[in-house]
Length: 407
Ligand code: C5P
Image (tube, rainbow, N blue to C red; front, side, top):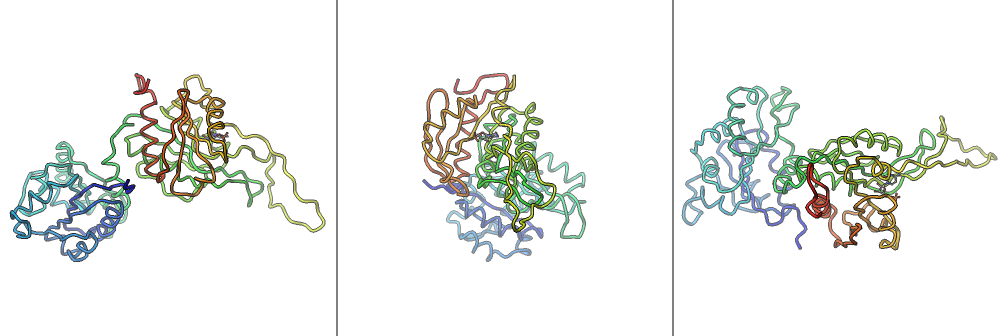
């Protein structure tokens, strides 16, 4: 099986005139690395900012710029180029091009392609903040949204013209994320998902502490997949070196007690709680105010440990709990420990994996434990596995005002 995220997807990527064209080189790389085939089409203005040669080299396909291009056998590039496409993405989408789209004008190859399409259209606006705010542009964008065009961004911040405000094109990585999300079925639309991820850090003194080898990758991948599935995602993360997934609200904490407080605060607004964090079981009862010194001849330091709250079990015990999903990282005998843990934590679904075979890795192999039995999922890349798991969770979690699809 091809595990690339966009494997089998064919995109027409249309560039219009704007300095943000430089971002499309990187976007094209991200799309092709993820398995998509990319057909570049450029307006004349776009070729002033980046050359067709660059775009051809990066996409690995000839670039089209003219509706009179005779390379297409029937001489109808405006029809043929989009017929195989899963979507047309216009990035950057200039003010003028948005206006053309909104009015159905077609006086060049790219605008004609858009009006002759039989696939979804996504636009990624990029322009000066005044051009974006101009009421004509806002009218055109509202019209495009009403016509079912997906508008990605724009971002806010410093602009090439030196001004600051709304209108920047989304960064290539954010555009890529938004395109990936577009293709995902919205199975969590309207549902609020709370996820804990990463390790916790329990201080011993101001510079030292106890933590564990959880990288946070599984929890972050689940947060990304849940957001791509249309969920409203709140991610509570211990100390990790990972970027916040696109569209996810993130809250950082250090200790188990901070994570507990943050989770308890968020739970009333949660439909599904997925506890992925590797929470420290213990903390020292007294954190030294100053760095503990190594002094010759002095006894070695010793610590008294006290138990941390069990966040998942506490949430599952609430009178009206969200649908709770636990994780278990075991070092062996997963089949026995997984089901034991599910029952002990009193959760409907527990996802078990073997710690040494997942910590820090990009792939994972898990078993689902539930009252009706267990299901083993094959080893897969954590991003794709997360998508599968979100599908399994969405099927089981009761819908607001209704039952789960499995009950
Ligand atoms: O007991 P154990 O740590 O193996 O249980 C793992 C599951 O419980 C995970 O879902 C983890 O996020 C959650 N957990 C928790 N609070 C703790 C310990 C574990 O939420 N203090």
